[in-house]
Length: 116
Image (cartoon, rainbow, N blue to C red; front, top):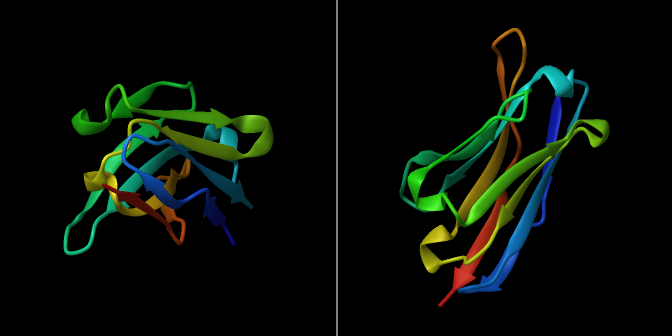
């Protein structure tokens, strides 16, 4: 069974940085598109960024210039480097994988809390 395990969340002050990691197992990682979403309390789950198998990236407008998504296919891991964090970035961050057959998989989420 496919597993996505996120790590790296926590509490940080505004202006600080965090790096999230997501380790994928039991899936052909190198041929899968990876992404990060987030969900704040009472809000819908929104795209943060995604990265294709070829390394192409796409970001939500509010994250451009502050967040960087990357992947290491040798480690089956996708990262989200988050800089200049703001209180409004507080949310549960979810890793997602789109397999070659089109099926989507989700991690359990990791909490990011940014204090003002």
